[in-house]
Length: 92
Image 1 (cartoon, rainbow, N blue to C red):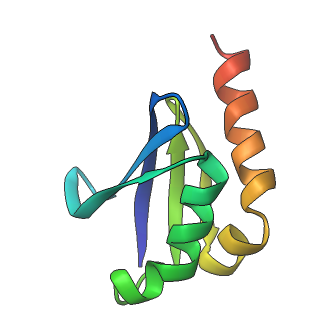
Image 2 (image 1 turned 180 degrees about the vertical axis):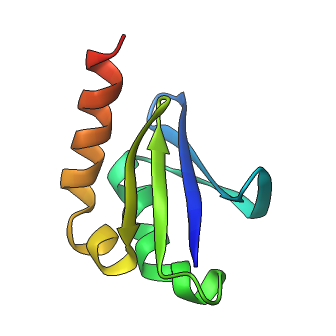
Image 3 (image 1 turned 135 degrees about the vertical axis):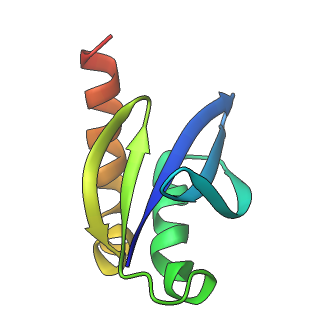
């Protein structure tokens, strides 16, 4: 199963991460100091927090990098976060 991980900038060093199944939020929102921390946290704990989840479609700033397997979210969190930041900055 693939869920959506939506990350939103909330303030200085605060990123709100929420998980959606379609348009319905599942689980509680979490705060992280950086985008890569949010990606890595959900990659590491996604299977436990959301049984059956194998990947998340990751969104930030109105842009998505597609569905990423949990292991890739942990191993490449910084790379994935940088891609999201570049996408959101270029499109402005």
